[in-house]
Image (cartoon, rainbow, N blue to C red; front, side, top):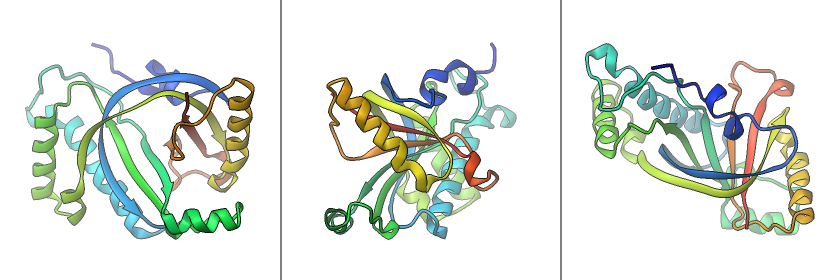
Amino acid sequence: MMKHEWKKQEKSLYLPKNKPELVTVPSFNFFTIDGKGNPNHEAFAEAIGVLYSLSYGIKMLPKKGIIPSGYYDYSIYPLEGIWDLSDEGKATQILDAHSLDKNELVYKIMIRQPDFVTTELAMDTIETVSKKKPHPLLETVKFEAIEDGLSVQILHNGPYDNEPESFERMSQFCLENNLERTKLTHREIYISDARKTAPEKLKTVLRISVK
């Protein structure tokens, strides 16, 4: 079987155009970690490391002679995050719409897993990684199905701090198409590795749920 590469086979979800578009996103399974605080701090980087340890733990199973039922070769999916603000952060934004205290950010970061990954396999992988590379965050990892459903998305090019410009375009698209947001949270999919990419060259999918 051909290697499944999300950049090629799932372009509509991961490489949309640089203009708002409507898309329906089905349910997918993810390893997730919930957290709060500034994503520039070390705790956030450690959470990302834990998610990648689990994701590579599953991908590399055949090299250990373990081939899960339905296994196929694939590219590791990109890091994603669902973002919100704490109640205190929301109160601050009401007073100043342009103010964002990153310490008040609330997030669920995640990496999608292929369809063959069952809950049992996911739990076994968490246990295996915990023995090989112990980390307190492994105890907080969940394996859960998340469905974005009907959404508006856009490919944002450039620094994360410029995202409000893309969100404004998405809001205008919603107005023009009689759509409204169903929740205040939004999803970000990190196509670029921020550690290795200049800010002006970053590519990030922004997605909001609508009705």
